[in-house]
Image (tube, rainbow, N blue to C red; front, side, top):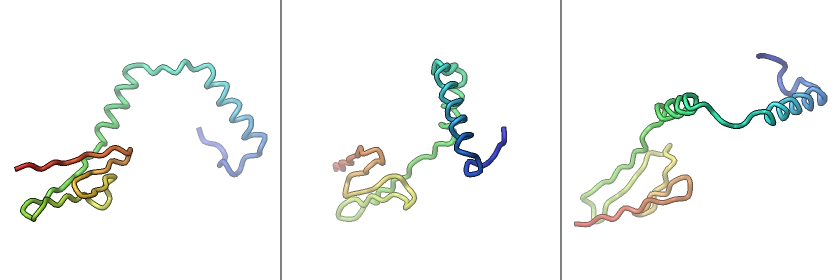
Length: 93
């Protein structure tokens, strides 16, 4: 389904497209078949990459680092997750 670029359509065409989309949305019950849901979930899980955290021991206190492109942030012994949670590492001997 190919059509005009969004910046090439008229206001009237845009309003009609939005109205058609809203009408379609009102008829959809919102449920996904289980095979579709789990198929999408499996695709996403297959693309997930581990988050690498490096802990260097041997210094006066452990040094925790993450790669620059990581969604994690490190502050002392805390790893801050991008959703606001934090993971606290306690090292005991």
